[in-house]
Image 1 (cartoon, rainbow, N blue to C red):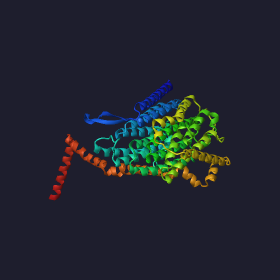
Image 2: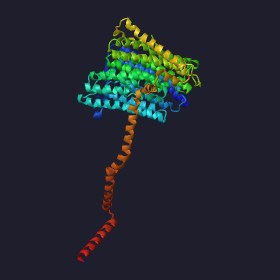
Image 3: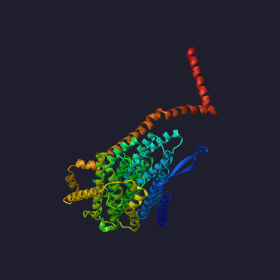
Image 4: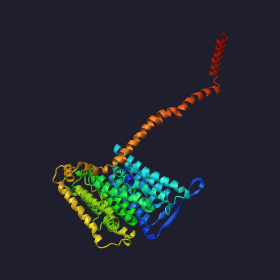
Length: 571
């Protein structure tokens, strides 16, 4: 009965969020081309009214509809995936808080609403990452929390700087320094270099949580911040450099990662780099469009990969081969989602990537064009690797305990797959992308050339692989250097910067707390003085409260000392 009640509760929340998604789509149609600003009165201190600005436009309503749609599918998926877990009700509750924190961040772009939604995302994400109570999950949750604390501090500082204007509704105008702080805060949530170690570490959470985090909620909060507030000129160049590094870093690292969930996470890192790259050049519509397309395909990809992991109880990509034989439904979702991620024509990823390539390859310097080209090619290669290793490769050793094609899971995945297939034309129209794209005939073939080049590389790679029994030796032969392999697999050794340095500082702080604050400083400081003065005050209190015996004793001793002293002087 308890499991049945939990299942009904999850279904209720899933249906409610689906209804909210439909309502948001209807709202997009009602306010088409307009912006509605609503001031919400909140009672403050001493009955003073605090105004909080709520903005309803195509951006906020479309984003909210996408968040609710993906969340409803993920919650319905959780009915089967987490049905046997005793703490599944807690997971569902945290996911609901997580989703509504994101909605709060979307609807209230004032700094007050922003910090409430931002902190809600940070706190709930930490609790979700440490859901499986083990050392690995706790370490991952700590990295996630500490990385996001940096953004919290920057936003709180921005709020303090806005107090001079008398309000926090800085949606329409803000100083350049506040814009710089908001831009730096967005780097933490969008996992740009160097604060990107928490994104793969967050894979310690259950698969439904990973699907939410990497599709439409936590990682997109930083990008949404840049879209809503805009990028000041002082931050544009910095974001352009950092996003370029993130784009290449995520793509290259995904080629060498062995954990299948981290492969998908690193692909998210690469796509986030592309989004920030595009918005830093001033193309907000293209960035938002690619964000929506990536959210749909990444949610379906995570759910399909999670179903295969759940069935085989294995995350090593080398042991997940041949899933098409046991789980054709989940395998089909993996293939279609990876195809959309690669930019296969007429899937959702093709609509956004094709537009970005057509406009940017000829509109920026050759350096950034080459970086964008490498990032898109790497997405084709790691998508092809994932499809081959998980679906078609005959080299697999872990038997399937059960089929991954559970009816409840498949229903959620196929519903998201409809978004992957039809979401491109839908958002292409609603966001008005067709009104800002003017290209020539030659640029239309750039995306197809990149896809062909990536597929050729994948074919050559795995043709080389089958010649060797030991996959590690084949990689050494193919890439010629173990140091190069380690450099790529460990994300350019940057985890040492954001992970090991942080651990060292935490250890130093713990030693300072133990040996100084609770040691010598405490003894010679306030606590020691309190104990010394406490003895004198206690003695004085006992004398004042009628301690006659003590008084007489002291007087007798004093009289004896005086008599003895007088006698000695007389002698």
